[in-house]
Length: 179
Image (cartoon, rainbow, N blue to C red; front, top):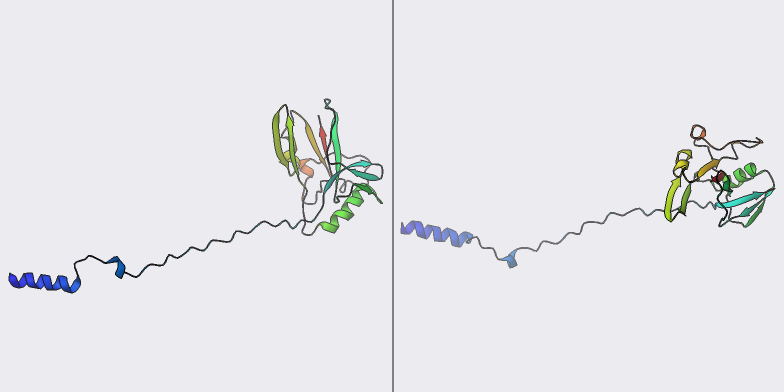
């Protein structure tokens, strides 16, 4: 039995008793996880777009609008044009002038949409118009109509864009709000 105790003591001394000295362990280096790079959005669109009122053969830039709201009357009708100039004298009709100027900037191809923000009866309203289906969000208060003068050039009268007429080649060149 003494031999067995000596043998166990010898094994314990040889192997240690299981207590580990933390100082003797190699320090684990904290590996920092690489932070994935988030691609920052870069607006590559250099197309200036402003709202204008068409008066004969020239456009007057509009930065704000006021008017009275009468049922079934137009609140405002604005042309869009790829410019920031205060006044533009058109050499051709609006549709051809718009298209010629727009094609100077349309690389990469862009589409025009609208962000509508206003307050009605102390209720803030915001929505985006990216196509004809988006124009009826506030139809109980007012109606919104989109026009494509370029596709309708040469026509003496044409109506607003319906969803069935909307496609990849549609260019929003005008917007109308009606009470």
